[in-house]
Length: 298
Image 1 (cartoon, rainbow, N blue to C red):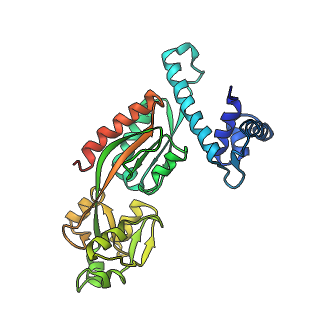
Image 2: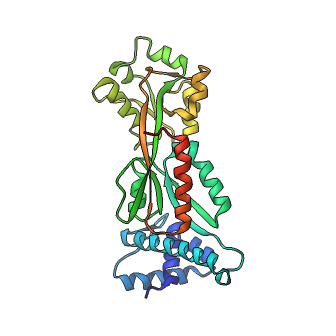
Image 3: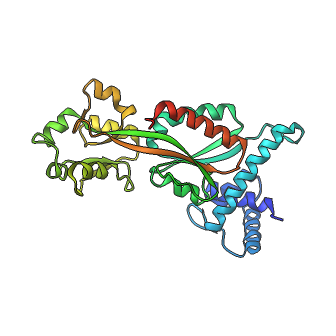
């Protein structure tokens, strides 16, 4: 039988990033947290937490944290069915998910805002590139993820959402300055581009499709979709922007496409832990329904 006090301590340390903050959340002493995790590590026979700033779970620790997340969701579901078991104060349960920044900045945030207002949950939203969010789910850090990967991890389901369309755009002044002789491998190798982070390959993918070869792009890093647009408007660089985010700016001429009819469509999928709870199933229904109206469907 698992010691759930120790499991809750482990989950709190991983979620809060330190033993001290976990102790405050659970209203115990840091030494009690340390003792519970030590006993749990002795029980499973391996390290569960990498001590650091912040603390992080090992692979086995992540698996146990995911189990705790599922147990808490199921317990919440049981309390709704049997109110006499409910804790005082109507406590909410944590629901960790991962999403790419462009979805969060456009169609995804309204979905989770309404869901969180209706459901007894506290959402923990992690942001990463759509090509990497599946790793959060595979590693046990989250219970659901918007990802570009179609094949789900073991123990998870996958639902297609549609495609997010991106357009390569910049300010008219930037285009006149850097692409007066056209957009090609030579001009792209000199004109500054905008990327979200070092994982962001959209700009390189678009350039390779246009030029039929790899182009080494000079780049500014801006980890925010809104800052991306602001920088483009100011003439800092060109980048791949979600069409739904910049459509008004393209229409009024504040931004212009580098090359017409070269939009890049990125298919998105929702992966979620199988048989986790009705709360996760309801979130899934809402995400799929919202995506059907916001994203491009096949």
